[in-house]
Amino acid sequence: MTEPTFDAIFDDLIDANAELQSFLAILDALLPEASMLLVSESGAVLDGARPLVVALPVREKLVREAKATDGFITGKADSGTRCHAISLAKFSAVLIISCTASPEDDWEPGSAIASLLRNTLELALYRQEREMLVADHEQSVRQISILQQQHGKLIEDNYRQYRLNQDREKEYARKLESEIAKQTAELREANVRLEEISRLKSDFLANMSHELRTPMNAIIGFSELLSETPLAGEQLEYARTITQSAKSLLTLINDILDLAKIEAGKLELEHLPFDLAEVIDNVVAMFKIPAREKGVVVASTIDNRIPKRIMGDCNRLRQILINLAGNAMKFTEQGGVDLEVAYERSAAGRIVSRFSVRDSGIGIPADRVEAIFEKFTQADGSTTRKYGGTGLGLAICLQLVELMGGHLVVASEEGKGSTFSFVIPLEEAPAEIISLQERKDACREKTVGGGKILLVEDNAVNQRLASILISREGYEVEVASDGTEALEHLRHQAFDLVLMDVQMPNMDGMEATRRIRAIEADPALRQDYVGLRALKQPLEIVGLTAHARKEDETACYAAGMNGFLTKPIIKAKLTMILGEKMPRIPSPKDNEPS
Ligand code: ADP
Image 1: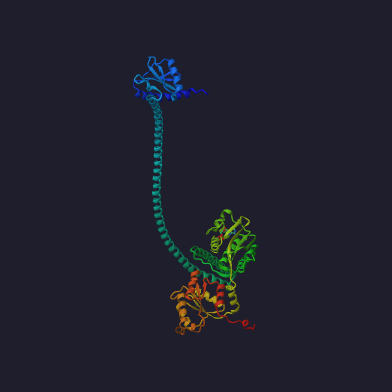
Image 2: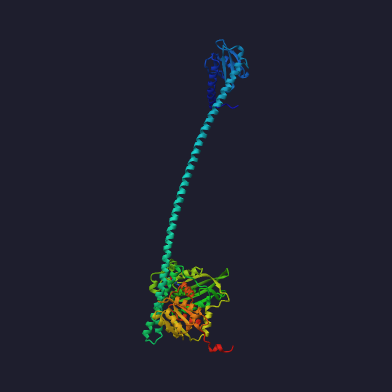
């Protein structure tokens, strides 16, 4: 058996003592006249409310017997009165009690007093336990209430925060909505203003285009004509310089107008069949002479998987390639310039092809590669001085390539050369469409000149220039200064074709054309017009205007014209349209039996 530690005994004693105190208090209340003595199991006196004096040997004997029997043991107090001992095993103590007032048999085991004592003792224990439980319970209730309070506070806090957030969100959404509404209104207003400005800009550009091209028409046309007259060497040089400068100026004007048109979203690409190889050959041919002079080789290759005839805007494609090849030539002093059309893949019935213009020229510094695509920007400040140019070419190419569904990029190394390339989808032209070029060629082969043209033009300089060009093509020409005069001419004479300027005083070209078509449609009226009554087909009327926009062309056709030429009149274009539209006088070859 292990010895209990001193601390454990001491703790037990303290606890037991506290219980004993309450037990004695109860007993005291039950048996007020009783004397008591509480002794330890060794017989030592622990307590006594109304002390009973019992000698130690008696105490020891009583303790021993009480412990052994667990009943009331009777002994004698020092006073000679009877006393009884009861073991309180739970407290490791023995209670010695003497109550002279109570009868003898009260103290027998099972007697009322004995039961009372035991019950009281148990009661004391129960009470103590209950108190402990109550204390525990109170503690728990207190803790629960604290937790509840904390919990409630947290819930309340959260809810308050939630409401606050909701209010804030609502307020924010309200502010946002009103801000959006305000900005939308402002944007709408700005948009209306921008549309108006854009319309004004387009109109301004259209007018400028007319005002700029008309005098350019005269300068280029007459300086070319001048160069063809007998001139002294120096005079010829001056005349050619005028032509060259005017052409550069016209290129610049066209570039600026092109860019303005693209930026206004007004540039529409054509969708017509053309021969790709022919376009590439054209471009290469343009640079053959300057290349030879510089000692640079110009070459081209087209992958044979790419269809010969494709649909698209051949003029704009040529413009891009001329620009890129022109730059390549300009910035290359030795080596070569290569134009390549490579097959990439086919997708959705189209041939995705890569167009590249490669040179072995000066290259572009890496930090300027992006900038050169911006308007009026060159690789460095010395470029204009050394090479000329305006910095518009690439900006236009970039936009045109994007309109064609591609993206223009450059790979370049300073001192080694550059490659500008773009990938675009090409659509093969359907077999049944005969190209404009073929029609033109067919016409040219069979036309041998002759016929009469009415030129309707208000500007005296242009009248003169166009008359000379028409006469040189071998046709007779009559001039009218406006629509009214043109109708008068038609009243008295027959013409094979009318070249009709659009912008004129009194009656403009559109109105004149509409009137001619109305007269043609009315047999009674037609009788008064020599120039219209004998015609089996509507009179050929070709519009002549410095407005080069698609909508101008459409307007001409809508007024009843069946052709369209832009000013300045390019000799080759005039030849082509006259060849196409003037009646074919059968050449002797046509009459030969086949
Ligand atoms: P421009 O040639 O009229 O100056 P571009 O927009 O066509 O205008 O070209 C812008 C600039 O890009 C050129 O001035 C030149 O500095 C640079 N650049 C274009 N192409 C080449 C090239 N092939 N090699 C070297 N530099 C080039």
